[in-house]
Amino acid sequence: MSASDQYIRVTKQFSFEMAHALMGYDGPCKNIHGHTYQLRVTLLGKAIQKAGEPKDGMMIDFGNLKKLVCDYVIAKYDHALLLNENTPRELVESMHQHFENILLTSFQPTCENLLLEIKEQLSYILQSTNYSLCALRLNETQTSYAEWFLSDNIKIN
Image (cartoon, rainbow, N blue to C red; front, side, top):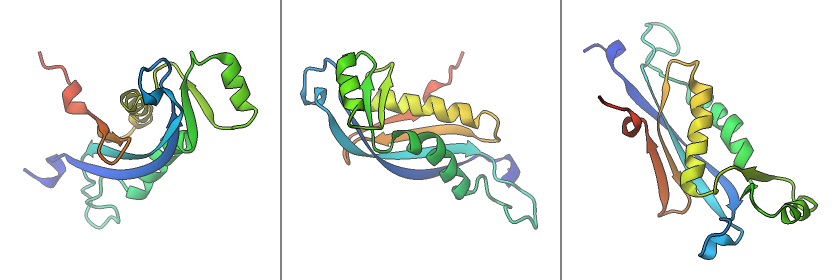
């Protein structure tokens, strides 16, 4: 099998600070608290195979992957407070008087739901490229994380 026929995976890791609260939850996560999230983005594709070209053997420039994820994910969530849109309006309005980056979501802002939201954002951005989103991993703590894999979501008849 030649190099041009083989798929490879490229992964880049990112870090951002974010707070959230789980509306109506019966444990301590119902309170506003923050995490240092670690996000791993893995793309699947084929490396460029053009002898003599500077990007020969490269699937994507890591700098381009960094810019893409930083522009569409990190810039949105870093130092933000995520709350469910069902949070009492008067509370949200009061917080907006003192804090800038409050994001209301249609979903409970769990690690799992945030991961799926990031997956949707990146999949949309990548649809016009030569590679696809293969896997995501979002660590909420050093020992707790959620993962998404393309292979788990392919329907086989």
